[in-house]
Image (cartoon, rainbow, N blue to C red):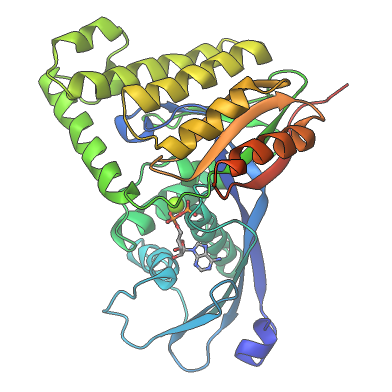
Length: 360
Ligand code: ADP
Ligand code: MG
């Protein structure tokens, strides 16, 4: 099914936005901290046309599902909530949005931690900007997208995913200060590429675990009398906290410091060590890993040609990310998956090789 087949006419315009993978800086964005994502080659495309019946109609090719908005006072659920949220937030900001036919197709794996949700929001907003000549910039798109996810899809997310989808490309890593939105586009460490492998374990406890960690961080910040844990740079300061707040805060402080070290310029070897340390911190201090992810990351870390590896995304299942020698990700993936899947897991490659720097 394409736009024409679903809506009986051709689209007026279309726009795309990529998914993202976060290389370093996990669970820091809701602590006003620092992150280092990059865009992945997979993207979401949104096509728009005008609706002739005063209702919005949304179709997802991936879900083979159509939703019509009969009552604009009632927020739809599921994938329609992300699109509806983008439209309604623009209206609340004073823009006139006509009734629309919206067609979505995507190559970003859904629910795997590569941010298909932000790709959907950003592609929707880009298409709307194009169709209606809206005077909004890429940062505002990220902000509208984040609010759509919070207010309409009910996900208490930080702004990393939407900023990455709106501002990053596959050639660079994006350093982002999530408090000030100050950012810097950086090359990846030399002679390296990125490999993303899914653990095959669904992120079942992800939303409850995520909300609990958020609450723990807020409590830790209150106890330490700072606005957010980002304001702590010396890890010893966290030692006065009771458990489990002490461990949670220690992860956030050390993780922010790891991202800031990359900003100073590091070799691929050092970048890899920081990723390994990030995984240990997420496993031991933040307690968001699961045995399958630990196993997958351990195999990666022991494999020749791997600079470093860690879980990526919220944890509780989902994907791993590794920094590997240029040109070696394919053979590394084959070797790692052979070992990992022997243990009864169902791992698979999500992003085969993201070459960000000149291998020469
Ligand atoms: P992630 O962003 O890591 O992929 P989320 O749970 O945040 O995982 O977002 C996944 C949700 O986003 C899906 O369940 C669906 O509601 C919506 N979504 C994303 N991409 C699409 C798409 N192409 N078609 C329909 N819904 C989509
Ligand atoms: Mg998401």
